[in-house]
Amino acid sequence: MKLATYKDGSRDGQLVVVSRDLTTAHYATGIANKLQQVLDDWNFISPQLQDLYDALNRSAGGTSSASKARHAFPFDPRQCMAPLPRAYQWADGSAFVQHEELLRKAGDTPVPASFYKEPLIYQGASDDFSGPCDEVVCASEAFGIDFEAEVAVITGDVRLSATPEQALDGIRLVMLANDVSLRHLMSAEQANGFGFVQSKPATAFSPVAVTLDELGDAWRKGRVHLTLQSTWNGRKVGMCEAGPEMTFHFGQLIAHLCKTRHVRAGAIVGSGAVSNKDRSHGYSCIAEKRAVETIQDGKPLTEFMKYGDTIRIEMKGRDGQSLFGAIEQEIVPLAAPATQRGTA
Figure 1 (spheres, helix red, strand yellow):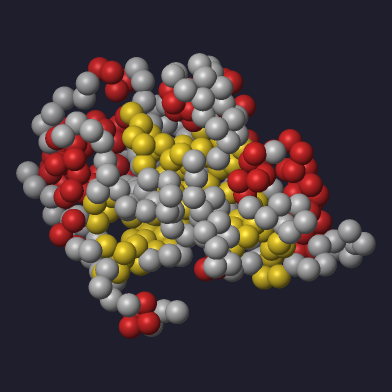
Figure 2 (cartoon, helix red, strand yellow):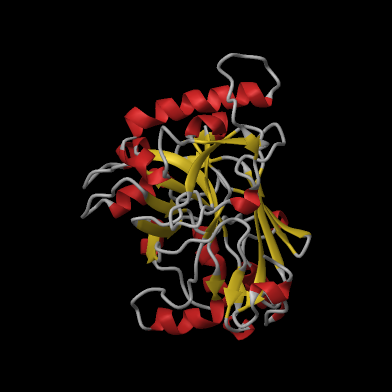
């Protein structure tokens, strides 16, 4: 099934069930109001949402049925918050080692052997996620604004010391992420050895989060074997394969978190920027493009994002249909009121 959260003026929004083709939606009122409720009591609530989802799909397909969803409405991604608007935990990995290899080669620094043995994960801010069509507000272009196209999962409870296989059983939903990075602030934060704070503003997520069955055979061994598309200012810059080259699968990422602590329902775990060794697939973040240029030409040529730039991140299924809906964001300055930018 596919789940989204609509804006209603509250911090946590209103849970809606969305049809498979992303055309119609239905409020989950009477079953659950918020996605966190579902995650806290998954085994009891999710079957009820599945029934509504099935009815909604029959209704969307034009099938006459007494059980069809009678109060469905057109689905509008612009009305969406992040599927889980705030979470108990946002832990973002760097599961594609070739991403680290490329950036470090450009910086003429070696890749530590530990990077191949256990995943890198940082603890991000989880109190203020962005919706899929929300603007990326930044105080200065000089911060080095970059997008990062990723896959992310939402978990149920996963116990302390869980194995990677046990951790996979704890995955409830999959979605896409734009883990916005401010590259020119990163070096100082990395130098202090205590993790990212200022260089990682609000992360945005796709309009819908989907259960694993929606992925079919594309979900294998804890990875999504589909193409992640990144379109910058209307130009497709990334067609990266999200599955085969993911060094550490999601079970391994979650198990890494569980080494010394429980992971509770409502935790979000990201893959890090999807990266392929074959550069013909493009890139899922500008930093990789700049790294290639530095290696080839001695310096980066591509600039980071500017005010007015747009980014679109999307993944399509085997049938060519959008699975999660698209993240579509514009970079805007902090000072400009929304009404002066022509938006409500």
